[in-house]
Length: 294
Length: 289
Image 1 (cartoon, chains in turn brown, orange):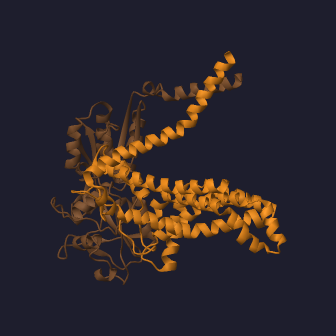
Image 2 (cartoon, chains in turn blue, red; image 1 turned 180 degrees about the vertical axis):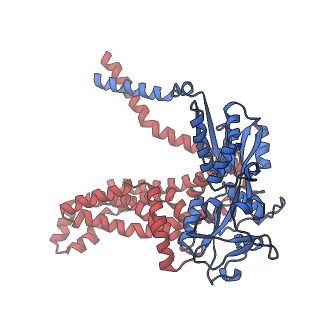
Image 3 (tube, one colour; image 1 turned 60 degrees about the vertical axis):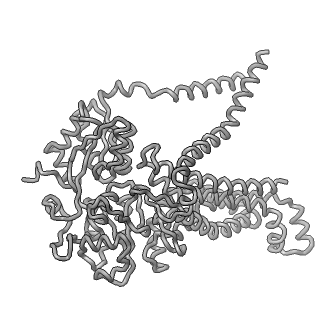
């Protein structure tokens, strides 16, 4: 009986102690930053965070992905200090932010080109924006309509919480026309990650999908893209994105609540420094103009 | 006196632990109802359940989940067609035919199957099964409801086998002895006597298996393709309700329409699994009598 009582007491003691917040964390680190958002740049920000902490060991940075929408939601719910995003903040999100008394401030930290990936064995090697739009809206459903074999096209897209999804919809499907109501075809396969798109393209000769430029390698094929039939086709590489010639490129952002200060400010300064921008290039993104004249 | 006090305290604590499950389920259901109804008020039940288009982040947003309901049902039905016969026959073999050594090994392996995390099943399916399905059936893509059904069948099997095995084993010896004494063969005994007597338990096992399949998320998200479009056959990509909630919950702003729509899907899912479990309970009760 006695033993049982002790057991119950221990159980409760444990239960109660686990309810309280873990102590000492704030004492150990001078400051801690939570960064959340776009899966596209999560690797880049991770490297920044690691190097930054090396120089400022008193600081603790947590980086998590989930999609640009997730980042903004977290910023609005006050669960992160910096939201990383591969798109600009939306009107709707801005309104919600004002309601919640949050003032999102934008910091552009790099550029990214979206590559259209197809299987290595697919004979197609160039497409226009118009053709891409028709493919993703299922108006073109067979590869032979665009110079390929007689096979059905399998369209791969990202989930709707992905900044990449939004960016592609606005720039390719809607031609940046804010009033346009064009949508991805419901037949598009919504893949949980860019890696999943890469994997499917790698093993499926019918598939076509869009991913960040970092995913290009010689096991898959990235198609050349032109604005229309009469303009020049460009390959998604650093030079073409930097000069703005490759048609599907986008800026990458960090968002903070109000003007950043203390560690958050230092971190963003670091991201924009020469060293930070060098890391941008190392992680297969495109640095912004500061270092582009090298 | 002291002993009495301790007794009552302990009794109260155990009572509290006992009703904890009920409290949790009620709270979850209440929360789902609250968010779900707020959504139905604005969007309407009919346009939600019978709507064909799901564009939650567009303007104006569309929240039709018909394609997902069909997707979930199709994947579940496919998984049942595969898992139920195999599961019941495996249970029969283990409880009636297998020698003791084989039975112990088989049982522990089937229980081990239940312990494989669903992400692992999804990942293995994505790498091995998906390309295979595409080439064998000559499909545009292997990310189909069929691939999902096969992987889910694996996950439902352990539940179906272990519970039907219990049911089959609890058929009294005297029934079998009687049948065999009347000159029935082993197969006749199994088919006409054992299976019949164990039927309520087997149905309950199948229902619990279905419950597991309907609610499964990770594996289907990885291998069914997630196209929110009403499929015309099992060899097309589908999107399930669970995958939608899992994929989109992270992005939503608390209190927004999209957030509530996902809760409304959760409510539909909860009702479906509740009905399935209720039927299972009904049959389990019957088999005990």
